[in-house]
Length: 639
Image (cartoon, rainbow, N blue to C red; front, side, top):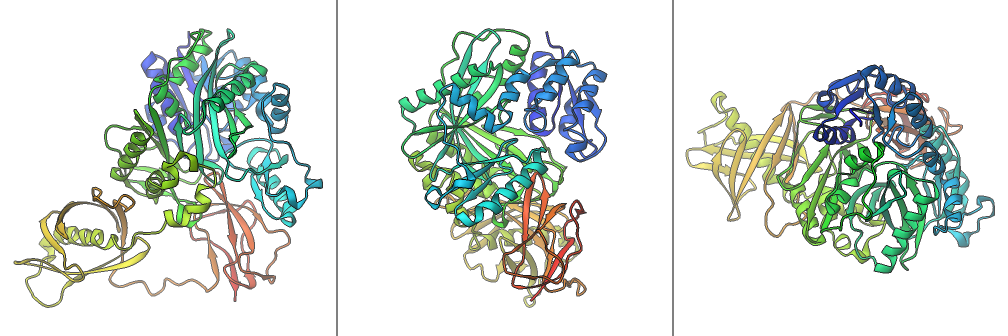
């Protein structure tokens, strides 16, 4: 019997495993980097062990430190979570060699699937359908588009879509460099890129007694940078014949490598309904809650049971209803998915949905780890009901802090192509990102008015209210992609606001403003954090894609005239590490608009810094490996 579990991970998945362990009476051990010393998963564990340093390479990716931590804390089992060393056969072996139970598949099974090229060879032998490999030295234009993929790792790292033959060589080099930096293995391969394909996967669970469960399908087609954003179970719109094909192929894959524990077999399904093996994740998936909701199972509890040697029932339970999961990221989709950092002041969801999060109110979102803040999961008897429930919960959420993808999630869930299962494919955001991230400039001013009025109430005893009829009060904010200057008078006759003829003030407080807007009563909740103001309001009928929250920055009355930047300066859009500079690039070179200059890595993603206009590279003060802060000068291009 397992009595104490160390989770060799952090954040949301560590908290998820701890939750099940507490329910089963199993004690918990956390590990943490210095950056995570005050993190929720550390606070919630029974015992915690420090891993000195901040970077993953010095902490969560150190198998020796993790095994030492487990033994020092008296744990008798290790759960790897997902990411980091969860699919590292050497780590699984080290855990077993230390006399600890490994809550995962056998090392040999992990090793078999570690290389995508080797995995494809094994799956071909097992009769699993595959895409034919492509020899990059023999490619013709007729075979385009192509997909370059890293043989190791995942998460979209080392992947490139090639649509022009002349770009293949450079994309192979770029993918290999990224894969080597991310996984320590620069091997890449090429296969056909299926346009209009869907990403469909099968959850499997296998015990040590020959039983393999296939727990339905999941659709994970909505992706950015080859990383999943919205997932659901079961995958909608599949024929029974295709579902059977997927289940059978997943079971064959599991049996071919002697699998044990929880895992996922991923497929690409084309428009004709043909399925092709992509890879097998030999761990618990991020999106496992949708399967848990549909099958009413606790997959972590089953992982623990299998690790203890217990058999599964002969067949899994029957599925019920539909579940949808959205990943809430601290990132700005409208700015190239740039990760965002800062203090998460508040994260609150309405009742009725499941929230799996690695952060809580007051936590700092840093640069060292993935920008995912939380997963929000909704279950309902039907797909339409589950999608509606999730979208409604997201728009009513209180999310105060760094910019997130919340509005994108709401708009995605309500987009006609998402609500139509036949239209789902992995190119969704390539086609619709611009429309999904366009700011609603029309609805924002009334939110800014509410912020200004609440601010005036808070300052009322210091002269915020005026009875003088001339000289309106003015407050200027930036937000929703523009600048808002609010001019108003608050007197004995109530509110008189310029540019708001259809607005009447009903009640006013420092944190809540109730307005009548064109005959509709609307309640605005105002929260302040320094010069940042978050204004939330319930959704209004007939505006299903209009934001229900706006964030504003109050501008000073007298701006600092010394805040200047040299023309052509390229500043770091976030803290991170300079991973490489364009080959051969030096100061004095002529560059073209859009030409890549250097790559910055932050939150497990690479960000390309390009020349804003044609000109001369006059300054290049950074070097590969250099850590930079937000706003650091990276380069200067003189027009």
